Image 1: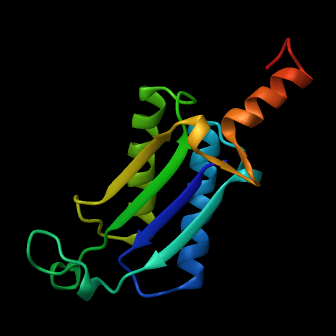
Image 2 (image 1 turned 90 degrees about the vertical axis):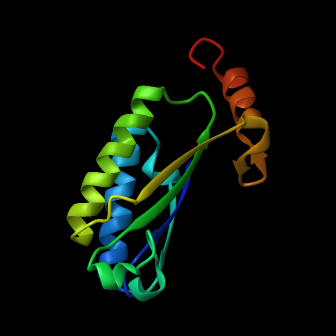
Length: 138
């Protein structure tokens, strides 16, 4: 049930947004073991002339960049899984966007289960319900 917000230094393009969302959904499922049916992804675009790294704009540097912010429930992934995810996202988004500036970011938020949820329930409440319904497997 993660939610991902990604900012791309590209002009708005539905095809690019779709490819980025599909890539992020796949990597989030494969590496972080999150259900794609519960994964939400919002993609925004910033004109590279308005994105500055180290002074000059990305347009002037002829590079692209991105910022991915993903929220997952705390203690559901290891440090190694998160490191692998960050590496894979950087490589695959770079392959989609072209010459990627080194200063492109992935921020994985480990959010407390009692402070995070969807559909009106926290993740902590969902875990309790799952345990009550299936005490030997939850």
